[in-house]
Length: 348
Ligand SMILES: NC(=O)c1ccc[n+]([C@@H]2O[C@H](COP(=O)([O-])OP(=O)(O)OC[C@H]3O[C@@H](n4cnc5c(N)ncnc54)[C@H](O)[C@@H]3O)[C@@H](O)[C@H]2O)c1
Picture 1: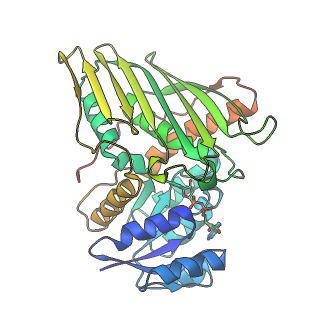
Picture 2: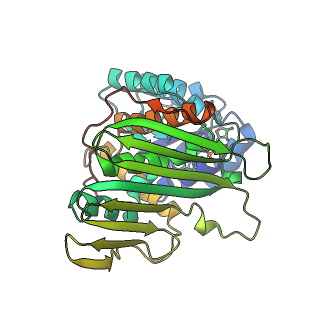
């Protein structure tokens, strides 16, 4: 039995608890949140869980094998370091951190504990539709990718206007997917943002553009939208992706039939029907990620998204953040960020 601790019992922490509780050989053993009411409320939902009065109390529980960190990005570095020092494997929610320096601190903590697994929760890596896209692009079905576009809407109430990266905290999902698909070194990032809910409120929408060393271009937008009460939650993020290459194009729209591929390379235009029509798999990809983490703990899988891979998405997101703050000036990427990914993993 894998006994897990959870730090952060907000919206996504509770998703993670449900996902892990549903695994056959796993129990939600301990919960800590600085907001004791949030921790108590979560504790009531899981009989196996004890609610801890501090992070140290949780980390002192010898039976805990691993900890899921679902707190704001600003807290990830310190909590990860404490968990690893206590000998616990960790799953850190995306984004890896809120800035590059904190991301580097996490890389250093992970490197100091090679015996422990550190998975970063880029849950879209576990979404069948994106896995289909990755396979199609890797198989050369669109030839050489030259232009990519990724976007998502996200309900404002599931996000936090105080997060340092603002909407890029959410867009980091797409940035990770773009980097995963293009497999090339990003060289420059520009971004601009504004507030769409009010004329002069906090930034809730950002458009960004990434240039790659071999000439490919990726663009994206993220909007935190104040959806009304009738908004169907299964439609949560409405992610979309378009990839145009020398041999074809690929479209994904998780509100519609998921992935359509028009491949001159293969002489075919068809739907990659691995997923049910309609989105609604938000908990499912979190569940697939939970199963993968357990597989990693059992030594049956290699980490699908390592801290190094999450760091490159953070690096680009942070460059976009800096560009946005400067009113859209290009930010050059000087760190070598490209290395071949772990592809789409071995547990699907
Ligand atoms: N993978 C995904 O699809 C996905 C979706 C949503 C959120 N997230 C990520 O999950 C993380 C949490 O987001 P959320 O939506 O659950 O936010 P939230 O605000 O609902 O919950 C965060 C919780 O962390 C607690 N907290 C803050 N600092 C803490 C600390 N130092 N120690 C313990 N608890 C602390 C807060 O009290 C709160 O209950 C963020 O990194 C976010 O980007 C990921």
